[in-house]
Amino acid sequence: MFYKTFHPEIFQGHLKKKNYFEGWYFKYVTKNLSHTFAFIPGISLNKHDTHAFIQVFISDRTKENETLKTYYFKYDIKDFSFHPKIFKIQIAHNIFSSESMFFSIDNEELDLQVHLENQHLTPIKKSLIFPSIMGPFGYLGFMETYHGIVSMSHQVKGSILLEKEAISFNHGKGYIEKDWGTSFPSSYTWMQSNHFKDPKTSFMLSYATIPFLFFKFKGLICVLVIEGREYRFATYNLSAVKHITYDDTSVSITLKKRTLKLVVTATTSDYKDLPSPRLGQMNETIKEGLSGNIHLKLYKKNTLIFEDEGVASGIEIMLKPR
Image (cartoon, rainbow, N blue to C red; front, side, top):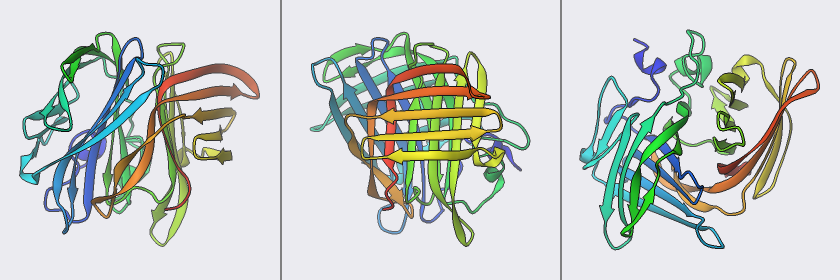
């Protein structure tokens, strides 16, 4: 009965839903940090413009200044298919799964061929109470947005052919998460990095305004993995946001859970608009950068026990209500 709840990576919806979206976020970074690619395959179900889609977000840091480009490719909803029990979806000839990704397009906008393998995925810990990063909220059927983490960090093998230029991703790193529901939150911040000085460190955080029945609350989910140990800060485990300041390109947030305190400072120098859902329709935009920095300080009883800075970070700062 709760198979999908414990496996948020698989397709959660059905194609007859109304005002519904579901999208997976694949992020890949080369070993030398020269290129970051993000791919977002998904579906948009609504009465105005039902379709499947693949978003492509490219960061090229091989020149003096970073180049950011985004693309949005629409497909007929009939081109979307999925496996009911494992994480594998297909849009036309393009295949996305936990093990690999195959994507190709050649038109007036973009010439791109992708063949990447994901190795040694690191999912977050689960339990009966916490079946996913949503915790007990994952059991509820009326949330506006649901979030799932597929892999906090993993090794990548393969290459991408961009405009006939081969880019090796061997020994690079990947990250996979997803969202589904009706709409993105009206205000939120999201950030992620697995490129710290310690290669075993990975981090993600989302802090958003969440509609719940007849009121709203500030919802927090955050995972920091250090040497295989998971530190989780979330609304459902009584973590609290003690301080937050932000502007268009930076956010500083302090989290507290019992004797632990996590101080997060995230900055991004450049970002692009990406389509986002409202009532299932991809007619709003968010701003995301792929080359931000995330500085972390973890304290236990006011003693600093960990400090590091992540680069090649995905950062979205949408804290002003839309």
